[in-house]
Figure 1 (cartoon, rainbow, N blue to C red):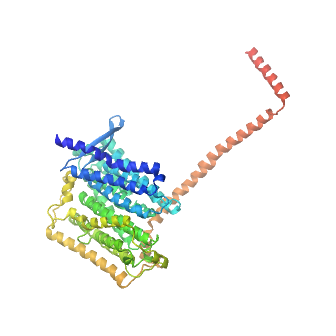
Figure 2: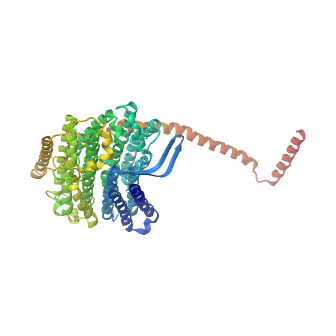
Figure 3: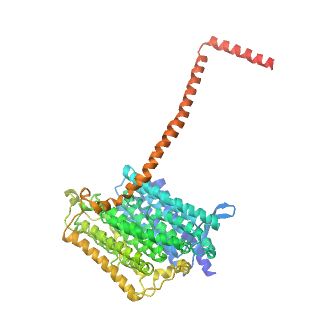
Amino acid sequence: MNNTMNLLTMITPAMMIPIFPLLGFLILSLFGKKLGLMSGWIASMAILGSFLCSINLFIGLEGDQQLNFSIFNWINSGDLQIEFGFLIDQLSLIMLLVVTGIGFLIHLYSIGYMHHDEGFTRFFSYLNLFVFFMLLLVMGNNYAVMFIGWEGVGLCSYLLIGFWFKNPDYNNAAKKAFIMNRIGDLGFLIGIFALIFHFGTLDFIDVQNQLTGFESNAPILVFITLMLFIGATGKSAQLPLYTWLPDAMAGPTPVSALIHAATMVTAGIYMICRSNLLFALAPYTLHIILIVGVATSLFAAIIGIKQNDIKKVLAYSTVSQLGLMFAAIGLGAFESSLFHVMTHAFFKALLFLGAGSVIHAMGGEQDIRKMGGLSKSIKITFVTFLIATLAISGIFPFAGFFSKDEILAKAFEHNLLAWALLSISSMITAFYMFRLLFLVFYGQFRGTEQQAKHLHESPISMTFPLMVLAILSAFGGFFGLPAVFDSTHQLNVFLAPIFNASKLVTTEVHALSHSQEWMLMGIATFAALMSIFFAFSLYIKKQQLPENDADLTGFSKIVANKFYVDEFYHKVFVNPIMIISDLLLVLVDKLIIDMVVNLTAIIVDALGRLYRLIQTGSTGFYLIAMVLSMVIVMFIQIIL
């Protein structure tokens, strides 16, 4: 009885989590012009309110307790009933804390970063709406509510990537993100309809309860999971639908941080983790996910080596890290994937916000070849960026070391080839991230004199979030210590009620011994240190600078041009569609529509000319016409 009463008291704070950012969006949309710079604080406080409510739920829910409630009956069609409801459990709580906690810091940072932008209020209204839809996605208790949030974050990404809409290139980047996501969303939608057809429900718990009667790799389960995975490849930027994410750097830097760390790209990972038993019963799909994840991680890491835009480097690192998370899912290690989602949110938000601080100091410059020596001018940004770089490179004891090492250990248990390729990907990550760090913060300043005079540390509204994220990036990994450090993996214990069912149906593999764990950690650390030393020798000792694009040849040119994937898509897909569109324009617009419009004009003109002969303006003519008309009418009446 007490447990029931306790859960009932939590419904109100649970409902307030998405309501706060929605209210923030409405207030800024309706009254933003009158509020001025207060808009930023109102938007930030809205997200802070959601974060505090999330903490309240985190503390209040005990053990394996779940809060599952309906707000209203949404769709009734025959036997199908879909409610608009929320599910708060251990999985959604982790995501809520990440989305609202990191989201609040990004909002706070944006107050200083966007201070002089003429679209200040509009920017914060979009940010609040973005977080609202992400919270719907995370909190929904069925796939239909999730899909609302899924499409909502797609809309908001379009609005924010193309925020500076006066620039045609930014508009093109926004459209590219929107269209690429629609391709994936079609797969997700097909998967949803298949769930309705075969299970008669979209409720997460109801679907899971019905899975007990299915055998492993049942064709319908493979089909559904493949469709859902296609949706995830779009949102979480996996091969072949990843190309939108690097171009999404067109938006303001805080948007990049929000998309890459706390919201959109984590949606695909969350959706699969929420459907973990469904995927665990489809090993064929998991094998495909493993292949795609490993390929994406390695492919994006290689591209990152030759990128010179500070935000593009970080963008490809996100694609690579997402590939690592999908590889973990493909190995059946759902909790390990979510662990890396969490730590990645810490250090990737810090990296993007740090990059924003660098860009702020450089007066908008993003080319790392025109930077250098900034550690002396922006010391807080440098130290925090260094911590994030160590974390993503997997250096002990920073957060990325523990989560990345856990995935590599799972790969070593299940698939040695996957372990080798992911290890190479991690080595490359350490190299290009320290390449970025050395070129930006060390050596001689390579910018203009005007930029040198402009160099200064960012305001406290920007540096405070950097410092908080630096602490999380340094110590966030201690939530999931490996067995050689602690027999209790705190995060896995917390998530056990979510993933225990899927563990019962996945292939059992003998756990690694402590000596094997030490060996793997030693190999990973040595490989990362070797990569860092190689970057140090090139860009600090030899003081090399990246070549100009025109001077590149061979494989270096191919990598710098991102393997010409965008060009390939343009020739194979975009150009034919444009040709077909032009043909349809000629056939439909020019021949059919124009013909109908022109024919209508000709008929109207002819009738007008005919009626003009009658409308002479002569009174005598009108009298004669009237008398003749009366005679004709009377004659007709007599005959009839």
